[in-house]
Length: 422
Image 1: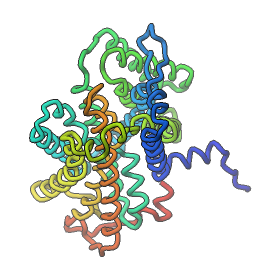
Image 2 (image 1 turned 45 degrees about the horizontal axis):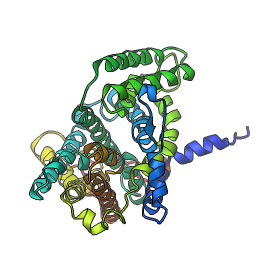
Image 3 (image 1 turned 90 degrees about the vertical axis):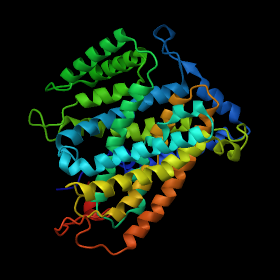
Image 4 (image 1 turned 135 degrees about the horizontal axis):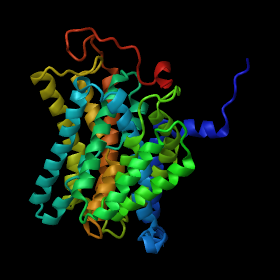
């Protein structure tokens, strides 16, 4: 029987959802923005970012950069919400005992960078700079997994599972931080209506037949109501993602979370994230007094120290303490030494860090400096992580890397044929 060739749309979906492709698109969009924002034609870039459109009566007359940060990024957070639901119901977060170490490591990877940032900000004498404490706490899933896929070949796939669990918990905590600490005024009426819309969405996605022409307008309505409530609109994406059932219904071949992720992820990875990166990463180093002056500010130093140093210390330190002082252990195939590159990968803040930078310092002199620091720290973390991954892959591995007294049963490695079939 002849094999059916994939269509052009199927090939595009497969290509754009690869971990390496997602990271490359993010980097490419950021580079284009940086080059344009520092070129003789930089005024056109900032005019484009400030271009406003949308219904003014609904208070949705937003700039293109705001539509990217509040609107398109909600698509990315919907995918995050779906992933979280899947992981909590049947994935790596289902068993707290197994997920305990990466979950606690994620907490350490957020607390330590925040402490270091606040210390640097206070030492630098800038009280206003403290508002950016959450910027170095985030991890960019797409970017980090892309670096791991390229430079982690030959390492056990359990390392990816650890990084993914850590990054997912990191994203969940970042969502809580955004909702709690970056909501200045809460309007209860639109929030209540938004929750009604979420409940209706939850009802529709559990029916035997669901129709996109019902779900899409409803999702947009929920997003608009959350935006009007004062809570950052990306939270709407997470709430809607959590409503998607993570179990198989009506004899379907896969859960609705898998189905919706398969449909939405290409849009998120191929359109939403690159466009957000394009509008968020355009920092004018020329107008800002040069790289030295911008990076020399307490805000920038705190972010770089937090992401490059704090993330690694938090992840490694908490893991070492937990595995030595509690019954919790790393998964088979993972040793404490593998946590060095993982901690460095967690220092790639990028997407969520850029978002929090905009929320921390709206219309402030610190915004451009914070963005420049996020970009520089993410590049440094990625380069250090790549070197650490190759060093780790070349070293000999024991048969009991997690030191639980049982031989590790490792059958798949990053980059081999079995792993590529994921």
